[in-house]
Structures are given as structure tokens and as C-alpha cells.
Image (tube, rainbow, N blue to C red; front, side, top):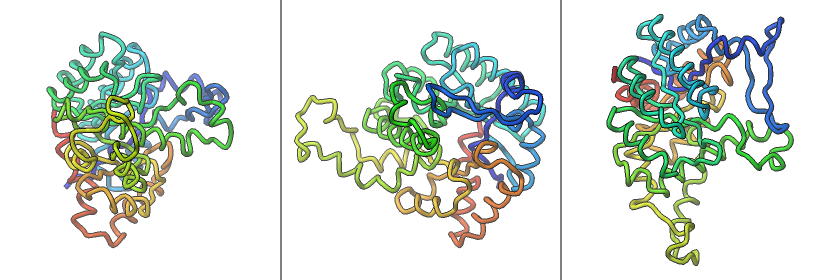
Length: 328
């Protein structure tokens, strides 16, 4: 069985190198005074990607680019072309995801090229495209096309903080630390309660960071589906519910990756209290949170030595998500 890492980041060198300066030290990008993302040469050093993957026994890395999630069409197309070159240069090691701008009519052509010419198995989406949330009707044709092409959607926290929240995340690096997890929980609820899976029942979504830790609060979310008891009038946007309970979609439409938790097996154990083991896939979040071969190897070693049933561990490391990357 191949070990598959669903959460590895990459950015083209020409998009990162000019920002680093002569000493190539990491550079922090800011937006509205809030830390947005860190740029460093590890993002484009594929030799280091491979070194870390080999140390951890990872056979296949699913590549996504923070610079392309929520970007304009031209940026997405540039990143996709670079990712195709990386995959072709290292046969069998990388499965890139397509980056598209659903607000631009050219998304369908770009998606078709990524799928048909390059064999990309999925799309990389942010948790929101600025004011455009994942349950917006504008995205339904994209979801439908993804199902038609047998592509999954990988959802990563929006790199840039949504507009209007600077006062809320004004210090302590709050947006990157906890705000992004909140974004993932909200995105998960929007996909389910917004009826996206009811309208596109074949859609498969990989929610990063274990859904922002949604397992810890899913019982509260379940309780808030009793709209009559909560006094919400029919027709209110707050009274909208999906056709089935949340668990129905968790078991049929959603996977949750282990990235974003700095290699914590405790976080995986916590998620397993509410999410079926078969719906969890492996992810490291290299090279942002896990940044070196030793830490990468320690994650897989700790997971194998966790005491979790062998079938559960092997499923997380590769078996659960193998079919998602099989196309192409």
C-alpha cells in the first residue's frame, strides 16, 4: 500500500524567490496588518520535498499552492502549468491539484486542461473566495463538473483573512493560529447545511486540518439543527437544514486530513471520537507547519506506534484516500 500525503504545499520559484531578498530568509506577508502567510525557499525546493517524503516513507504527495487558492485566473494557470512540470519531472511521486478562479468564466477550460492533459485528480479551494462562500450558487457548476470528471475538492483555510475582520484578529497571530480553523468549521457547515451535497450528491471533499477540529463541537452543531426548538421561523436563512443529518454527509461526501496539527497523534485520536476512521486521510502540511525530514518522519512513526488498530493506521496513511487520486 502506498502512503499518500494529501497536504503538501508548493509554489513556483518565480513567485517566491523575488520576495526573499539576498539572504533567502523567510518573509512574512501581511494583509491589513494581519499575518497572512510565510514565504520561504522550501516552498519550491522539490528536492527537499522528496527528501522529507522519503524520510517519512511517503510515496505520493498531493500538491496544492496557497498562492493559487483564491487567486485570479492568470495566477492559477501559471501555478497549474508549473505543477504539471513538477509532476512530469518526478513520475509517480506527485499528484497536483488544479487551481481555478470560479469567478472567471475561463475556469472550466482550465479545469478541463488540468484533468485531461495533466491528469490532476482534484481541485484546491480556499474555505472562501473573499466574500464568496462555499455554498454560493456560483460554485455549483464547478462542483458538478468536478463530479463529472471524477475530481475531488480539497478545502484549505483561506490564506488571506476575510475582509472586515482585522479588528478581531488584531494581535497574537490569531487568524493563522485559530481563525483558519474557524474558517474550516464554517466551510464544513456551509457545505452541509447549505445543501451542496444534496444538490451534488457525488461530490467528494477533503477538508484539511481535521475540519478545523470540528469533531470536538459536532455534537453542538447537531443540536442546533432542531430549528423549531430554537424558535427559528420557517423561511429564515438560519432555519435552513440539509436533507439528512450531518453524519450522513460525513460518511458519504467528506474526508478530513491530518494536516495543520503539527504532527499530533492526539489530535487524530480526538477526531476519531466523532469521525469514522475510514474518512480520515493523511496530511502533513509540509513545508509550512512540518518543515524538515526529521519531523516528517516522526509523524508517520508516531502514528504507526500509536496503538491504534493497524487497519485504522494503514487506512489513514493511504488506503482511505487511494481512490481519490487514482484518475489520470
